[in-house]
Length: 392
Ligand SMILES: Cc1ncc(COP(=O)(O)O)c(C=O)c1O
Image 1 (cartoon, helix red, strand yellow):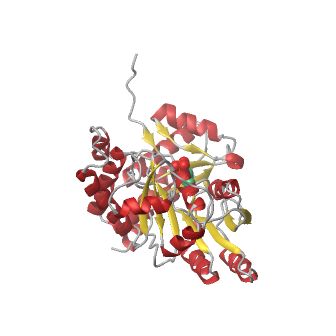
Image 2: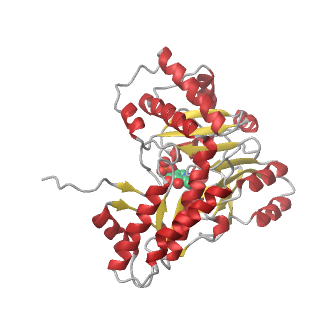
């Protein structure tokens, strides 16, 4: 028996909601991957990705999730034994350590407490002490999904460039939601995935690979075949891929990039900023504590501490059962200690207001003494203010 319920509201940090126009393309019959139509689409998507990343670097489209793109970035830049500095302030930063170690890198880490940002001054000291330039690669997660912290890539990548190492940036949960001028910031390699602000289901990833990265690729001795980016580039330059890609997803990505362009790239970025400030204002007015301070808070993910004796499991269960809204638990050490609301991609102010109102309602039912009458108006006011301040 099917019980009629409100539509599911996916407020997790990915996969994110998919617009109907993209779903419609995904439902179409696949086209031939060597057809002229497909080549035209690959050429257009590649060009649009470069525009979005404000870069002349190659934009290589890979079939596989974000972690596969992370692996591609590693195996195309390092040789076993190379020293790699991983900047770690959460679960995804720590994943890079595991990937690099799996390929024989000598990994050193610079860590910040989850919920805080990478300390850029500490990084500057660390790099200054590396007099013999033994560090070959520095890896950083732009938006640490496990906590909702945004690291300062502009400053970090500049420092790395000055040192002479290669910078690899994980922008899986920031690309397309946040402005990342790859060339201006001097980022050498940047990876992202389809199931976040690009509004597609999981399954595609993109690696931006710049000139300095290609120089490293030419001498990197790590074994590779499917993820040999030199082979991918050769095909990409001819508007194709070395092997059969997920053609349906690439067609859908073309639609996604078109939707972003039609809305306006800076408008999309401003929308994410507005959603962040609205959500934070609404949550605070309920008396809830946020894990990350305003300065380092991500525009795409917000981590919240459960109030009083109410547990994360109870909050997630009630939101799902009463309103069919899905929010995420904390990960690893933060499991049960925080819950995370994702607000990226096909998510709008309405969705933020609805989430605040429903959270407010379930907390009230659970006896949380909050100032909830104010939560929606607090959110609205914060949204208006952010909209006024946003660059047009
Ligand atoms: C920052 C970050 N990096 C990497 C990944 C890994 O991507 P995937 O799960 O698509 O392999 C994720 C996934 O959520 C992420 O948030």
